[in-house]
Length: 224
Image (cartoon, rainbow, N blue to C red):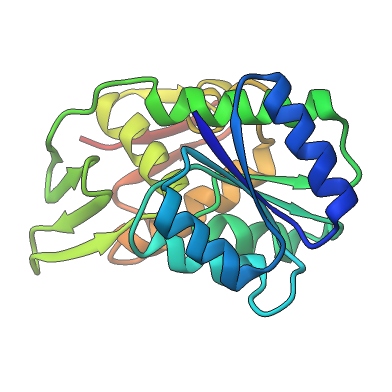
C-alpha cells in the first residue's frame, strides 16, 4: 500500500515517512503543492498525508483539486487549530485533520481509522427516502423535485449513508460519529457542523428541516 507524504518541513516529513514505513507502507515524498499533485497523478497512492502550509500550492488547494477527481483518503496536517480551518478542511473533502505537534502513535491511529472507513463496507448502488435519491458510489444525492445532482464531501457522504440505511430510526450521536469518523475521531460539535452542512445541501429550508430530524439529548434521524 502506497502513502504520499507532503510537507515542506523535511525533518517532519522524514519522521512521518519512517512511521508509515514501519507500518508497512511504501512511502512517496513531496515537498510542495505542485509536485504533490504530480506525484498523486502519476503514482496513485492509497493514502495522502498533506500539510496545509506549503509553497506554490497550499494543502487546501491540493486537497480540493484531488477531490475533483478522486476519493483517495486525505489527512491534513497543520499547526493551526482554529475551528474555521478545521471546518474548511473538512468541507473541501479531507477525511481527517491532525494538528501539529502530534505523536507517531496518534498519526498511525488516524491513518488506520481513515483506511478502515474507506474500505469497510460494500455500498448499495442507490437508496431512496421520499424525494431524496442517494448514490454512495457517485457520492451524490438527487432531489427528485428538480432532478439536480448534489455532490457530497466524503464526510457528508458517510453521514447521509448512515442516516439513509437507518431511515425512520433515531441514531445516537456516538453511533453516527463511529460510522463517520471512527472511534474517538470527532466530537459532538463537529457532528453538529457536519449535519448543518448536509442540511444546507439537501433541505429546501435548512432552518426548518423536513428530512434530518434532531432529537435533543439523543441524536439524529432521517424522517422516512
